[in-house]
Each structure stands twice: as structure tokens, then as C-alpha cells.
Image 1 (cartoon, rainbow, N blue to C red):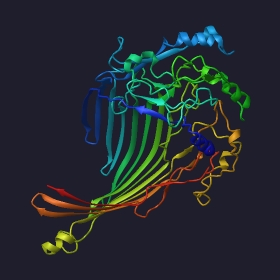
Image 2 (cartoon, helix red, strand yellow; image 1 turned 45 degrees about the vertical axis):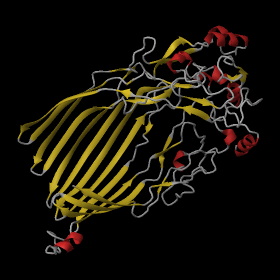
Image 3 (cartoon, rainbow, N blue to C red; image 1 turned 90 degrees about the horizontal axis):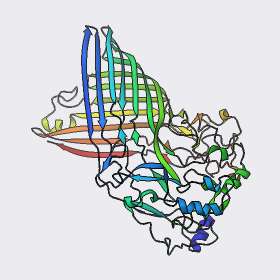
Length: 552
């Protein structure tokens, strides 16, 4: 591949992965409303109930000058359909009769041709009940439980407007006939010029030959249900122990999905590389799109002709079909602040699952798997110690003012964090594996940056034998395979220097990852890579921060 790039460079042929982008300006707006009612009711001397409900509404997003895409018209004939159908009729492929070939679909613009200025319609019934109670079983023992619903935002904070037509990217097309001849050079990579900024006047022709993104006409906000129950006990010496169960369920999580996918019937189900299917779908034909727009080449593959929207490379939308669930046991022990110090320890044992992607683009339901945020074990130990020197402290309480100015009032803080690493994902392309998945993971003593897992457990590493144009049935994760966990010690030292009444200076010295412990990045998960199974980078180097803050 490197040799090909050098040869292209020497011949003056530009990279086809390059493009020129022109950005658009925007001024988006939404209005947020929130109302709530809440009350704490003491039903008995030992039982307190918390009851409330919240209602939220975000107006749909708008752009001040309507410089944005709203929806996608799936049924509208593309402006180039008539010409493309005539061209196709001269050279049809066996899978689609000339009379059945369609070029349907195109982008719609906000505030144009009767379209609403709003980019979507929002639901108005986002009510969020909250209920909880605390019951005093003993003078120093309390049982607590609660449940609540929380909605996410789908406005400016989480949704970016789509400005196709008002800003665009012109790709480099070195060849229009799959390399037989070249029309672009490094001296002139855009012989036909840049794609013009047509704004909304481009209508259904916007982004022909490129990717398009749009919003569903009606959108519903994601929401999360959370529930918990647990016991809290106060022991002598101001030691508190809290043991709880915490769970949650995420619903209507947005999943970015490409609707321009090849029907499943054309894909291979073979467990080995299917050269016949690859050759069949990769065969080139005279493109019926050539001549209708400068972006189209002279040839097109069977694969692209069989797409439901062959005039576009992809048709992307956020579907509200994702979901997640979380269960955890949480333990917290705390030495409440007394005698100039406090200590806290918390441990969480948890499992988080999610369905926020599709194994195959044609699948009707998202794929259930370990969440990328799953961390089975997390331990945090923290503490604060007011050093016993200076006025009002154990040592030097009678220090002269000048000495106390420098020696008294110091505070030392420390925190230790340990947690499991994330599950390792094989990515969107399935890695060919014919071994025993239980043999892939290695023990801690066997792992190293050069061999994080057993790469010889049954992986096919030959690039020419990898799957392509296949239906994927194998998982994205092995449950026994995780990246390096986090191990970090952080310390800080604070001192406040009084200057005059209501004015003081605070000195802070902080060390993040004080022991400079290497927190390793994920290993290479591509089987055909020369670094497969190796870790080549690390995160979180030691950092020192010194600061002075004037308070007045």
C-alpha cells in the first residue's frame, strides 16, 4: 500500500481520500421549559416520603436563516431519475429490470416549499415522576429506596444541524473509469472546480453522489429509569457504612444508522472468504449516473447499483431504537470529619449492557452486548488531613503570627482509584476465528504490551482470506478480554494565606498520577496488522500543577 502511494505521488496522481471542505455559518435556537412539584412528607416519626414530578419540554430546533436540512423524502423522484433510467435501460443488470429501476429520495430543507422551519416535532408528555422514602429501623440504621425517570435533551446540547448545500466537501476524483485514465493531478486535483454552494435551491439534487444525513419528522427524547435501595449504618467513632443496590434502564437511545444498505439476500453467509460473492458484487458496469452530475464516474459496481438509494453513498439518520441496562452493588465506608481528618472508601461491583449498534445494517433490532462503559470493578479511596501545625492545631498553637502565616493551615488530600478496563471490541468487520474463545485471554502474569492476549488461539491473520460482503453472525466481544484498567494515585497540598480582612491567597500543589503508573491504551484489534494484540501507546502520564488563587 505504501509503495502504491509513493508511485501515485511520483506520477502526480492525488489521493482519492482527500477533499476540500467549505463550512457554513449557523445560528440555532431552542426554548426549554421545565416545571416541577416536590414535597417531603414525614408520615411517621420514623418514615419520611419524598414525592415529586417534573415536566420538561424543548421546542424543536430552528436555524435563524433556515440554513439546514430537515427531513428526507423517501418517495420523491430524484431530479436525475429520468435521465438515469434511460441510461440504465441501455445496460441493465439481471437483478433489476429496467422498468423496476428507481432513483428515489432526496433531502428537504427547513422553511422551503412549505416545510416547517422546525427541524422536527417534539413530544410534549415528558413527565418524570420521582418517589423515595427513608425508614429508621434503629437509631443508627436507616433503610432507603427510590425510583425516578430522567429525560435526555435532543436539542442544541446533543443535536447538530445538517447544513448540506450551505457548506460541503468536494472529493478528489483522480479517475472516472476505475484507474484506466486519470483526470486529476496533484497540480490540479479539482479539474471540474469545487461543488457550488447551492443552498436550499439544490433541493433533491443536494449531495448527489455523496453521503446525506437528516432528521426523523418526529423525535422522542431518550430517557433513563433509575432505582435503588440500601441500608446506611452509623458506627461508634463517626464511621458510616452504606450498602446499596443501584440499577437503571436506558430507553430510546439514539443510534446512527445508514439506511442505504445492500439487501441481505445478496450477501454471503459463508464462514470463509467467498470469492464468488465478492467478485459478483464488485463487477463494474457502465454507470447510468455518468453525465447527470460531474461527481459520478463512468463505471459503477453491481453492489452500488443494488443499493436502495444508488444516487447516494449513504443515507444516515438517528433511530431511537437503542437501550441499555445496568445493575450494581455499591459499598461506601466513611470516617466523617473529626480530629482534623476524614477518610472514604467506595467499591462498586457492576455490569452494564447495551444495544446501541447493529451487527448488520439490515438487522431489524440492535445488537445486545457489553457496554463500552462497562467497568465490573471500581475502587476509590480518598482522604483529607489538616496538618496538625499552627494556630488551633495540636502542634504550634501558640506560634507567633509570622511563623503561623507560613507553617499553619496546611491541608493534604489524597485519592487512589482502581477500576477494570473496558471490554475489547473486534469492530464492525468480523475477525475470522476458529479456535476456543476461552483460550484467547491471558492471565495477568502472562500479559505484556507485546502480547496482551493469545494471538495464536485460532485467528486467521492472512489479509487475502478475510471476509467481505458477508452477513455477520459472530460477536463483537469476548467476555474474557479487556483492556488495561486504571490505576492512579493523586495528591494535593493546599494552604490559605490571610492577607487582610476578606482577602486571602490560596496556594495549591497537585500531582495527578503521582507514581507515574502507565495506564495502557487498548491493543491493536485488527488481525492483519503487524501489531495485532500489541499495545503501542499509553494514557495518563504524571502531571504536576502549581497555582495561586487570590480570593477577595
